[in-house]
Image (cartoon, rainbow, N blue to C red; front, top):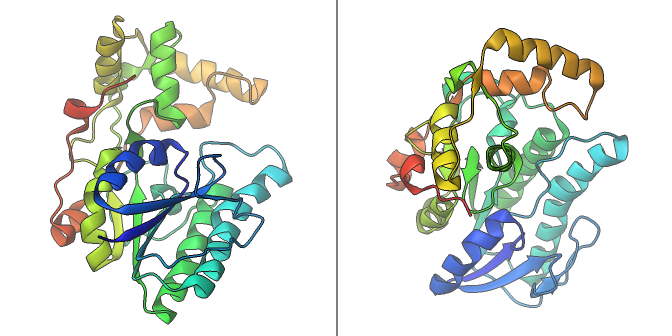
Length: 299
């Protein structure tokens, strides 16, 4: 039975993956939670790891925030990049794992729109979040090659699961409170991944390694997600407003600043399709993703 060091176990991914991991592996956790086996902030400190692990699952990171100051921008690099370096320095002392699995993001491509983007697309992301993940990917590629560690980098799309963060969580909250409007009939499509699919990928990732986009085959529209969430919430599907009206509201939102419920950037994300290809992961890892519309259950 493989021994796992799981970083970021108290976050959204960790909360959902930890029970599954503990059924199949010997798991120790590292993070900021009081229940973590290694309670430490790797963004600031090189941890003292007292045992050798077979597999590292590195999910600790900063996301789902728009930096407003230079200090907030720097925190992305401190956590996502320097934290990764500090973790690897610790592993050099405790013993190299046989496999390292890094949770990255499709944000590294820097796209707001596109269809079936593959892993070959250039890493053009320019936000602090994307750049910090790109730098971490580059560092790990060199570190794992040098130290003969099998490296897997997975780039999830929007992740669905109980109490999701980010835009999906905001959609759920808005529909539940009646403060959500569908725009232009919600025709835009997005790649989504069920959170438990990450756990289902782990055995193959440990053995094979590689870089993979991970998302489902459904590529649901906003409207399909809105109807699903509304039905589970006991609400009517949200009313749709025309694009011209939404754009007028977004222009006003740009003038109002960060507190506005919608601006042109948010409007673009809602009305333009952005999907990613999962063909490489399906082909090389013998993986079939779960259907999001059949499996997503809100809390």
